[in-house]
Length: 411
Image (cartoon, rainbow, N blue to C red; front, side):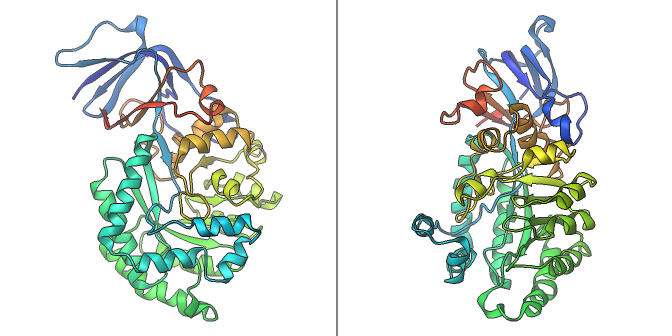
């Protein structure tokens, strides 16, 4: 279907060329007022101001946006969307004073999710995740990454990745898969780290490569989890099989994960709550994207990521939801953008860029999504009438998404 969208109040993130944004560039959010947008075969064909519109083509449907603001759909580059059950009991434990480490030590946290996942069939996992994905699309997510990591066994990890592959094949939006077998050490390998690393390298990765189950390899590089040296070993094993590295880095401590990610040329290092000058400098001097997950810091009552220091240093940063049952049970990217402005002190323009075009680059989708650029997919958010771009993060308690378009079709 070819579509002409007219009477757009603000057409946001209009770019003739698409590039990853760094530092001060994130504050630049080009837009057109009183705009139109042409969509052809699910792709952005052209755009401009209404006074430059000369008519519509034969067979082209016209949709009157009636003053809606239109922007690229959110690109959520870090989620754990496939999980078997919620963990609200641990939420109450945290209110009662237990720490993340306390809960993990008694079999909670990641191990809790692993136990539930291994008791759930692949078909049930798919159905649950599919419903979550539909909800996120209605909230404006137009591309998403999903990680394994709740299997922690050969069978469990492969089951998760096969479910993600099914979601990728069925989904109208791009889905990227990350192998996160190195999420934590299963109890049987608590004192045999090398044994579990061998299991990942020798039994999981060959099947993953043979079946094409993942795009990325990820490791939780953190004190009490995987050391920088172990992270490097696991990532290089995945890289030899064609997987690009992403790293869970610097969430709880200054772990060295950022520097390891930079050293390996990781696509992104994610979390970054605990950053020192050396980690910021390393990231700023690299091609690696720093992906910030503010709702995880919020939910765990941790210090928020130092977004201003990262931007001032010239880093490329993205925003993502970290949707998971333990530390960020929400995939609402609208909330992520608001929280980034309120708590990370990002400008609305910076947050929107980080959640759209830079999020796309953090999934290898920068030439396909994340901006209003000719030839990119028409995955778009149509808002309710709003007075300005800043109103989106300002009105954090309101659902301002009126309609979502995926591949040129409203869902």
